[in-house]
Image (cartoon, rainbow, N blue to C red; front, side, top):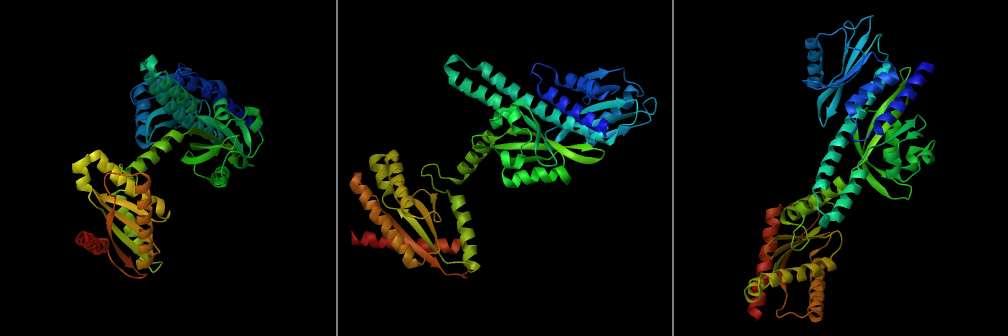
Amino acid sequence: MAENRLALQSYTKAVQYIMHLMPQQDLWENLTEVVIRFFKAEWAMVVTKDEVIGKAGSQMTGFSNKKFFDIVHEVIQTGFLALEKETCPAAGEAVFLPIGNGLSTDKVLAIAHPEAIKKELMDIYLGLASLADAVSENREYRLSLETLVAKRTREYELATRKNELILKAVGEGIFGVDLEGCFTFINPAAALMLKYDENELLGRPVAKTIMSPLSGCRVLSENGAGIENERVESIFYRADGTSFFVEYVISPVMDNEERTGCVVVFRDITKRKQEEESLKAFACTDILTGVANRRTGIEILENELQQVKNGRYAVSICFLDIDGLKTVNDLYGHSEGDAYIRIITAVIKKMIRETDTLSRLGGDEFLLILPGLTIKEAQKVIERIKTELKKEIADNPKPYQPDFSYGIESLQAEEAVDVVKVLELADEKMYRNKTDKKQKI
């Protein structure tokens, strides 16, 4: 048991050593030296498919060069570790551990001991391989940012400073958790991201301090019997109460084949999540008006019609066509025509509920979806929109009279009509409305 505790302490020191490496220090040489220094291995190597990129310890024994690389190639191809017992002297053992690069394996950490490798030491080596993967990935990203910053001129000093802040923020944080769910150690990068002093977190419960209840319980359960080395996205909370998106990996810590805790390696992915949300919004939104685009509007309409078919509620569909848009474009230019469209859509958005959907089908045609409203209730909504539009025109006069024609089609609960049919019905009513308006002129 004392030996196991010593191994755990060595693992903690090894992790801290690796995480404090400067970018200019060779990760793979230092990784092999850490294995020799803290775990008394006979030799250690980091190998790619074709070459040795880091080594420490005595000269490799028990392997021919061909056999050594045959094992390396097998581990890279399969992604599974390999054990070799008979090839080391004195009944020793060598382990070949995969080091990932995204979804694939491109390196192998090979470690030999003059005796059989114990299960708890094997788990520690797996954790080191996973940690090296995360540190290597971060270094590649930091290198790309440093290259970008180096190319910036003084006129982009503000952008450079922002990139430098991003560069510092993406460094991986790491902390240990015991079976009670409390911090056992935390590295400076993690403390900086979480806005705590390093010693301030020791002994405090992880779930109640930096995690939401759901993600916190996930970490605690994985101390007992979770999936190892799985990348998980979650939210962490800082000391000031603010939160940020993270991606973390959990590596177990074993003592006599029993879990005693885990090590969590995480990084800030807030920028990536923001970019994903921006792309998602861009794909669903009409650029000119900011309302839903045609594809999104049709998808929402299909969903609402399914709710109607299932008997959950009624829905009213309003097909809108902006009057006189071509005339405005011809007389005042397309910029004014765009402003004309935005005036009307802004008023409509102001007058409808959050549960309603306004979608631009194209050009001067719009679709308004009003869940739960009868045709009479939908008619009242349109009348309120028309009244508000007149107020807007009075407050901000234009050399033209913004208006629209419309047709409303209402479906009752359990009524089954497809998207094409309901749009055709609403479109027909819209054209009758437009025709009636022209006849009155």
